[in-house]
Image (cartoon, rainbow, N blue to C red; front, top):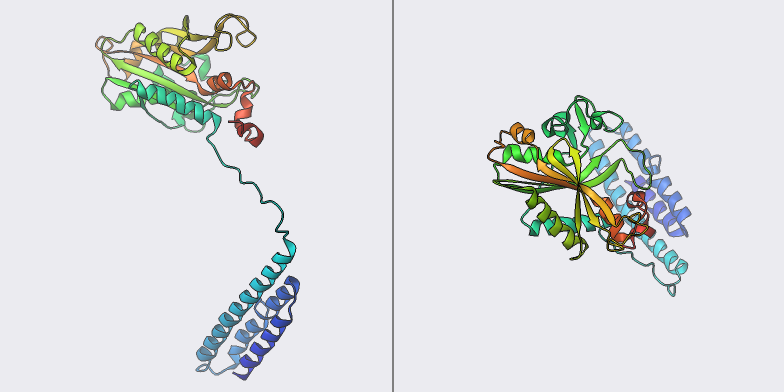
Length: 333
């Protein structure tokens, strides 16, 4: 016990003499560190009779807690004293930057808001898909170029990163009996080399409507209403014949240029039109694959790119800017 009292007195004297953080650290290391004097006392316990060791060990622990509390108080005192001397209270404070939604998320919110007000529900699905859902169930033959490794990103055991959100449509149709009216927004992946207009990862919104008597006129009316709400009431649409494995007939959708109103400018390459995405009536083979009778049910599907729309609305000429996390770019939105 005399040893403990002596050690306490020496520690308090050394602590009081410590005038800066370096001296304070030396005191901590000398008494409370892994090789400090308190730790030596624990090693000396083996010299005591066995019946005395528990009581002596308890006293050491009590002393250790006491010294640590005193040390923390002294450290706080020194830090506060140094802080007052070191900080110029007349300097302005650091500005706090407030966060905001990413520009792509802002566009996605606008898209989903328009479609939900039109009666569509929002569905989600896995980004890691099987070839069955990504290609086979969407009537994509084995020889189709989209299935090549030069276009798609494959994983192990028949899995891949989805190339579009269309597999969500199949998953919904397997579980829900029509009428079905959904959109499926999300990230998709392609084996593309990044440049100003291409990215190996981008965002898509796929739409699907299946019911009795759905026609191409329903598709045209739905998309015309959407793009007019998105770009303005004077927006016009143009449908160009195209081919997609999962729709028949299929069409590419163009909107009148939002910059020149269709007169022709640099953005639309003086054509007056901007390409927006694909569309068409659901191929009967797709309906048959999910146990729906194509004689009873018909539907339409469409897809659009979120980055494409954001680049047009925000006047951005490089898709990579959306993914570089440059605060100078993002704070503009």
